Length: 463
Image (cartoon, rainbow, N blue to C red; front, side, top):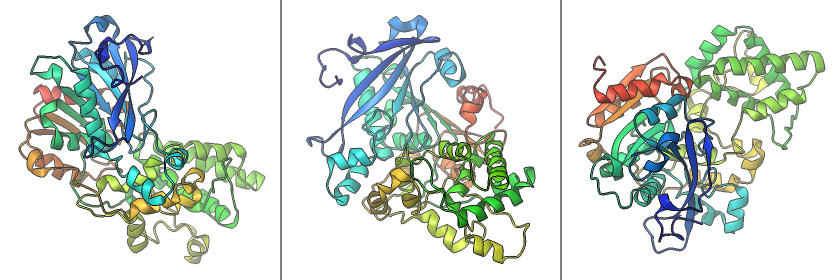
């Protein structure tokens, strides 16, 4: 039952909501009925939005008074993880600051009308219909869903201050969403924290990666030969994963995505070490190694990441047209070469084969089993030119919402210089720049959110 269907009872007073205890908190599983297209509110197309609502165990009778902190997950295309406990990490910090927590599965992910090949095939017959539908699953409508949830949960609150507003915490793409929220509904936000996700205010995407590869091979110099051996094998062998996906050389190179996370070098090295040993001792890749590679790549289980990834940067009608692929082919083809014949032709066995990073490519719609079924949609979205504006620079320049964000100097996923420009364009933005963490600093260390809270309070002034 959705909040719309049971509107005579306040959402927070409903007795039909599933709830259970975790360490330190009570969890309520809530669903909300929202328009697909907020510019056509009378339309019959709806999406279901799922929110996991967590209340401090010792304050479960104060749900109508406690302010809400809404967490926006990174991505795009990823649901919120289940919190094993509310007594550690940023969850504990939120409780200590007097909040109850909202974990939102952004539309198209998790339990919020998920986008996948089956769901689209069940709704639509043509590619054009599918592309038009998926185009509504960007940050602007994610934010409008959040605003709908806020109005429902805060209904009846007379306090004009923070209890009727949302505090926001956004990781990575979640920070992009917060910047859109600040543009569209600044009056609904009490404060905002952005971790590794201060977005570049650009109209189209771009790419980078070379320095992290150099650091990886500096740490694991023997992997130069191992990776070359693996790429040679994958070029000469048709390797299928359990789901019938192709483990091509270019797909193997995508393990470099983990270079952007704390501990990522070590994770990739373990795969490389085992794969090279398999080839030397078995003459092929073992089932264990193939499963390990597949488990590190979630493009099939979260397909929105691939087909919508570049669109999170697109504004003013600009299509992405596979920007990263074009940049790679035009500017960095030799550095990220995956053809063994071309690599071998260099004649230098010490030349490393570079891994790629967060970037997405059109060939992924062939190599990944689930993405194959979405190839027409992915190609259509790359050419789609109906994107609206995600950020309002005039509103951001007059911002009055307290905002603090951390920018990781060596962040592989979000360009530091462009993020710094954005931070300077948002009035009152308090920026923390550090090289102590990588992109996953929020989950790696609870000190990140504590530092930002202190920064916003003014307890830390030496920026």
